[in-house]
Image (cartoon, rainbow, N blue to C red; front, side):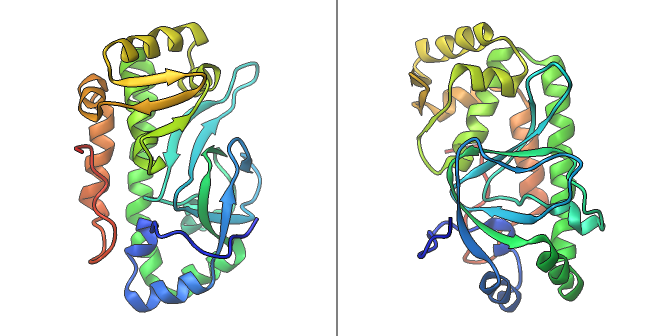
Length: 248
């Protein structure tokens, strides 16, 4: 559904455009509300829309027969869903599911392809963003293979905290287990350990981050690697939002 008044949070990719291009682009977008759990695109299909999250965030998941979906990446207001169009490929590589409800800017895929043709600034920006996104996907694959559940959970909570624009969010143990590719009991144990250490408060799916520093110390190196890659390649525009950071 469309919203009459856009929220004040900016999308950092759009903020990276030159002023004139940014204003032109914003006038062609609509602001929509992303409902938790809704599927925005399905693997193998054509993109119908592209999304630039503001306060909502989107999970990129891969699907294998007889297994729950496994999360490979997370997109908040630092990025966009549909960046593959910059490669000239209108085919969805990973399912896009709303993991955090909130607002986003939306544009039809056809109109965005027109913007890419007419605005070289977008192509230059998306070339860098695609590098960051591919790095996140590769890092996540290695993380899922080599790191312990508690470190991966801490990393995932930090990523969600960065994008939720709030100290709390709602996620069930089963949802967390599916996203991390582990048994629900493993998430219950890991979340319980984080709560016992005073890093989070967890009750009936409501997660409150109590200590960013503690989560950063618990998380594996993968969190900082992806953040640093983003900040090196996609510096915010003057007057735009601050850098994506892993120190609060």
